[in-house]
Image (cartoon, rainbow, N blue to C red; front, side):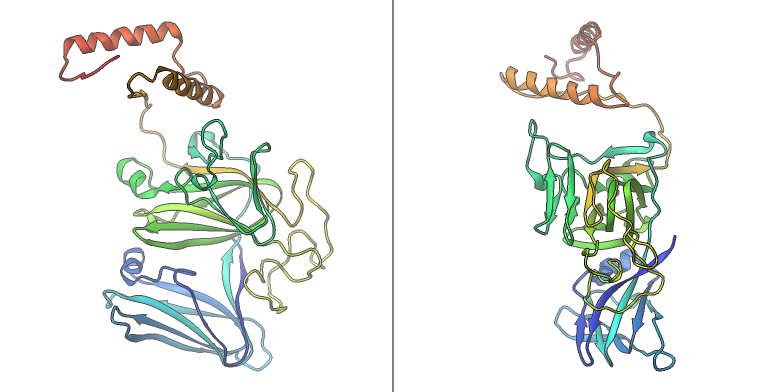
Length: 384
């Protein structure tokens, strides 16, 4: 997996940049120790000179210095260089992590981000635990239960059934319907290596987000550039098996008139170059390759999300038979509508369309339930 650099900050001499909580890694000391019991390494790249200070802010507001590093090129005029910082909090109990950059000269700070490969389709549909769902007017059209759109150019097109993101817009799928309880799946099932897949087109940054109690943090950040509709798969790290997991997709396409690499300048406005990066919508000389195919309905400055979901590489332990009980009192019309909607949904599903009981078999099932009810009312409390 190749890595590319994105601009984190462009600082003038003497300027200070303090990272917001959880922008790069979790800022709670207790949670950091839970995720990284043996510590971790922070990797940055620099153009110019800057100081890095990492401190711990205790509950009483006092500041405890942890790491201080002066980052300078080997010789004047040198290009981008890499810096790695080992961070071990094993001797600290609580507090919050503060990361601060101070420019010693005009400086650009970069973050290394891996680039995901893309594929035409999911190799095995049986590995899908469940797919993302989008607003359904017949059921619930409250968008924020499905995703949250940030930026004026983000929109859900209900007829086409996809999300479209303009430049800078973001879709957050850490929601009621589309998040993934990694904690419960790892505790109650044999799913130990889940992954998220996205069906999309365009150039975007994908962040794997984790939520634990009141703390939300970024567990992974990746870049994807797909000229045509494609599938990308992101594994969930093992050290996130105690949290709820979600994903965000952010459009990082450059404006058509800009010659700057969109990957390198999503955070800053610097015109500094970045080694190893180029815009996949153009060739190495910056010449435009043209719009994407009409089959995706996507242009080079737009990200289109057609769907997604959660996967697992673990094999199924056994076949599951699912019974659905609707408890209500004298609301036959509502129950009838609900059952009809469920039957329609299942009948459209590629794997479960043949699993609906026929009227004849339903009678058999009802007879069997009545027998169970007659044999043991304590074990089978109610049947209607």
